[in-house]
Image (cartoon, rainbow, N blue to C red; front, top):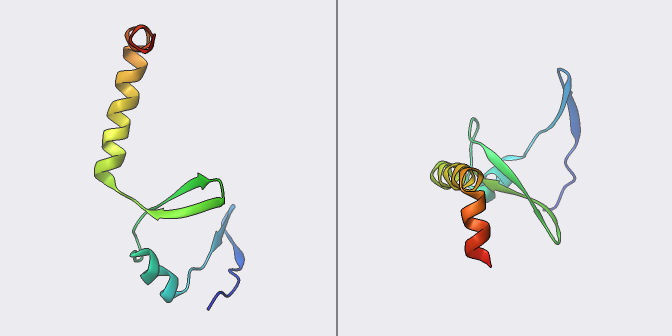
Length: 75
């Protein structure tokens, strides 16, 4: 069923309560992390992937350090 989700105040922020069936669909449980991902169709919530997040952190660090080299290679 596609019930609307209600936004609620949580301290100085706003949160949303996700029903159990949605948590099961996402494959997450309380305490897990979700990533928001912009897509052409809107925003998607995806499960956190710590291994991928670490790989992306390392890639960003390399790209920042070796920007000039990467620019030359792209020519």
